[in-house]
Image (cartoon, rainbow, N blue to C red; front, side, top):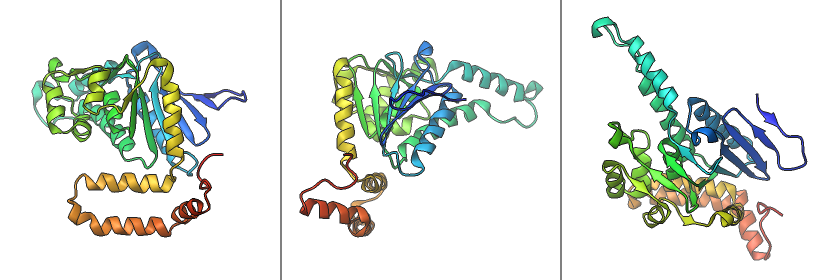
Length: 286
């Protein structure tokens, strides 16, 4: 059961694997397994998805910030879950390998990480990741789907799967989407290692800040996000997602309809009126 503080400070809730804190329209989510460099257990996957689903309901949350406790973001999947899945897979295999195979427990576990990344990739909310220390596996995937990725100089991206004889299966699509086919393939076949400067150079992160400047940089990004209309952000993210797979000429009419709905909707009316009246629109925090 979550444990919530009772102070006058922003509300913080301690889950089994996460810490969540609301500050106005922003939900801060901290991966909280520092003893394992925030390795992503199935419990953490479930809690992350539930936290996102709750944030998307009601319209009061406009941005989600992801970061890790203990100076690391995420060291990838929890090996204990993988070991248990391997045992279930062995138990499901008929003696002598004959007969119908049982359900693939390892594939089921792996798919949960992919579904997590998909959920965060498709959220209409603004998503900001603050990346420090180790970033691997599912953590690498979340970094790739973040709308804004801020990094500290300690960040160390790792893609060691092929060097271990396995495949970066669930994060591969998000690597290609973020970095392009050439860079993603290069990293995958070399067991990629990237520090802050290299991650910035190839567009994996958007900015690198000294540790004592990260919070100020995050605050500045959130100020910019909250100055934008939440509905317009959601519609823009959806349109840009569609644009990845659609030729520009085939998107003209759909884009025009999206624009028309926005202009004639309450946010468009408020935004243009506020501009003419030289005031801030009503979605900007006071």
